[in-house]
Length: 379
Image (cartoon, one colour):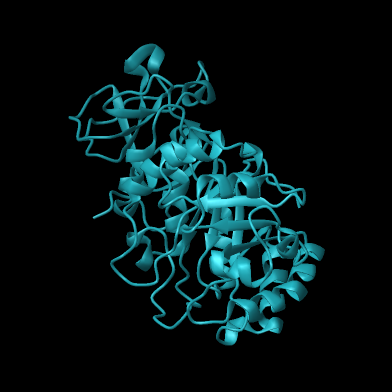
């Protein structure tokens, strides 16, 4: 299956032989469900401390055929011990390619020369480095060792133990450095429905995502602008979770949930509900400015002023006719601003989404998703 127009992809995780979700039948059903919903990637591990890597690899050979028949790409997290146990080496990945894998995630135990050698394999296998630990200098050494850049990607860790996940800002910093070098980056979100043992505490990359619905975690990672692939770390996401994450990840722009003003007009609402807004490339300090809103409003459309109101951080506004040529411009405030008779308040970003504003940099795309509850400023 081809990637969506956004270029972003989605995946699930499977752990053969591990718990009720690890039977071949359960994994086959999970892959079929994923394929139906437009997911394209399947992640697994060949060095789980709780399971035998050799036994897992044997099961993978059968599951890989099923994955390929569904248009899914199978990734495997491969420790050096598992590589050796299967008769493979950095310069000979045929034993792993014969399992039907599409990508290998390599972690500790491989130097730059070994990773570079893996990328030169003749089987089309992608090589995925650890995005949570690799540093730009190390990546540069891999490239200098003759790596094929088009076969190189990166994937963050997930963290089973509570309180050990990464901060969103650290993920942002690490992922941006990789993306700037043309490296595709993947990260994990947890399920709140079907978690993996023995801790059953979720498998997120970002610690604050552990308790969040996965679609909200996806929205935050989407806002970073540097994550290419989103993976469920847990093996049993519900169909509702999978669909909600898909809607976020495949959407055009970061979804910001808002509550509408009671007095919003039909013209203002049409501006708010445009399919996508784009922050200006010359991004303002105090507000996010939609580059498309004045065009969508139309020069002949009247936007009469209403009584001016305070504009705390996260207030959605539309400039009225008193702002002359700026009439119709939609903004979202990044900090508290005073009332202005030239500016109509039309809504407010929900408190749980305010932090997403910090990631809407120059050229960022975003959508305003109207909350279905009664209109009025959120309490």
